[in-house]
Amino acid sequence: MNKKYKLTIKENKGFTTMDIAIGIIVMITFVGLMTSLFYNLYMTTTAKNRNAIATNCIIDVIEEIKTKPYEQIDHNQIEQIVKQLEENDTIPKGYNVSTQLQKYNEIEGNRDKVDLIKILNVTVEYTIQEKVEKIEVSTLITK
Figure 1 (cartoon, helix red, strand yellow):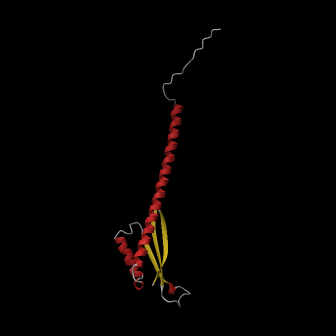
Figure 2 (cartoon, helix red, strand yellow):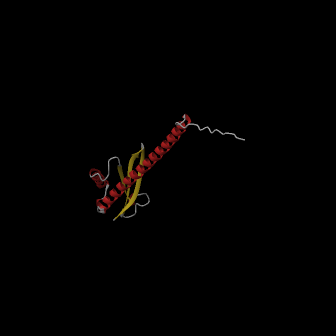
Figure 3 (tube, rainbow, N blue to C red):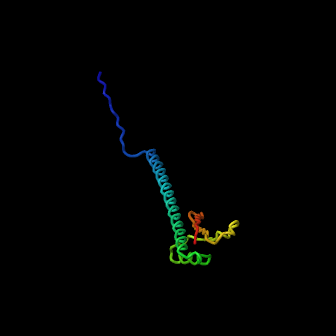
């Protein structure tokens, strides 16, 4: 039996419409996911950097205040220190520093105590992604 088998080979002249459609869908999905990933990474990194700068601002304010003698530390002195740090760009623009000073012996229940401790609260507010973030640190200043 002599049968000739004729092989028919389809000519491969290019891509079909389905090949192109699948390629475009895969590429759009990949690019969308990568863009989303990089954006989230950028925003997280920016938020952490801004938080670190705000923490450094608090540390700078506290360290500068603690260099002054106990008796000289009052609201006016603290305001001058904060203003000076803002003018020197130690506190960058966009960071709002506020402070609160309270003597320990002025707190209810401690009025009979000697004036040896002051409580200093330093707050820094900054904006990221149109949200106001706030960091607050309290420290004691002693004689």
